[in-house]
Length: 144
Image 1 (cartoon, rainbow, N blue to C red):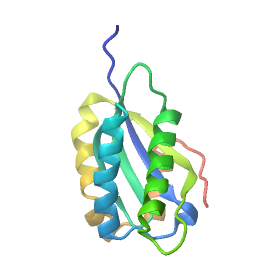
Image 2: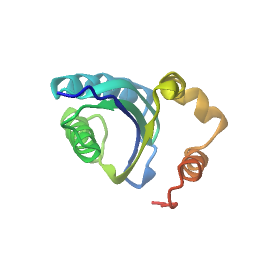
Image 3: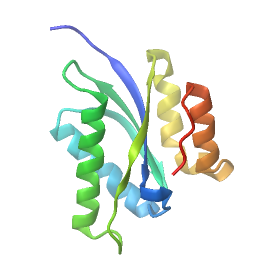
Image 4: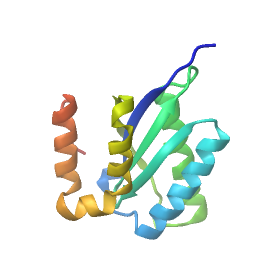
């Protein structure tokens, strides 16, 4: 068996970027996703979000794909939100997500960035954050 450490910074968004995630829901969601990922042997290092999106820092193992991890986290958490009736309307995540690899030297700064989402979004809107992310990592801009 090989020794593998592949760090991925994920960002996933509510359907239509609806700002439905209150601080209370984010706190509950953080706890729930941590428990779910631990059960599914997904190494979730950090998680936090703001109003319409979540950030996660995950280290993949040899048998995990980015698509499987995101399907597991997004599918299970949306089902949980709806089963818990945390919102008045049916909750969904947007199909798309962002995922970039980071080097070991960037783990600390990304952890800090994820933990400071509420403070970060006092200065910068989510749309500005997405535009910056897309440009920094060379993605084609997708709105919706």
